[in-house]
Image (cartoon, rainbow, N blue to C red):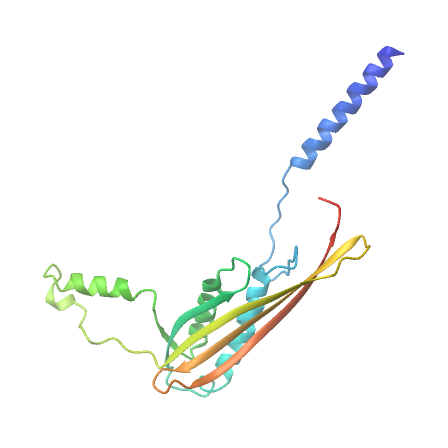
Length: 205
């Protein structure tokens, strides 16, 4: 009887070890960038694709860019993050800039590369670069419009009641504006709103 109990204990221990080992393994799969994946209620890359698609379509089809034929020059001054999350809003603005450029509706000057441009043109004027290949100064083009935006969020949770799960809600709003630098007039503005609900068990992993 004692030997049987020992064997049973060894088998149970072995099964537990195998179960833990199986639980620690990592499984991966390739997913399409267009596949919607939401593991919780917080912002993710799927949201970025929706935001970019909606705002670029609005910006390139409505005045002033919608009817423009001269590909006006824009400069991006970034999207302010007013949420409680660490969201890289530069990823949103970079994607918007890329899509607008590919649409052929506008051109851009780079705010981020200004210091690099100045450094390179200064170097070319030191005499180390041939006269023929130097960049001619005072030939840069100024932007006509400035693109700015703000990302905000509102978080709500269900009140304390007896239930097995608790629901959390997050509302996101991204507002984008196009300002005429000469007149300071906002020539275009639009926003995208996203709301997500997540149900979480009070007890669980």
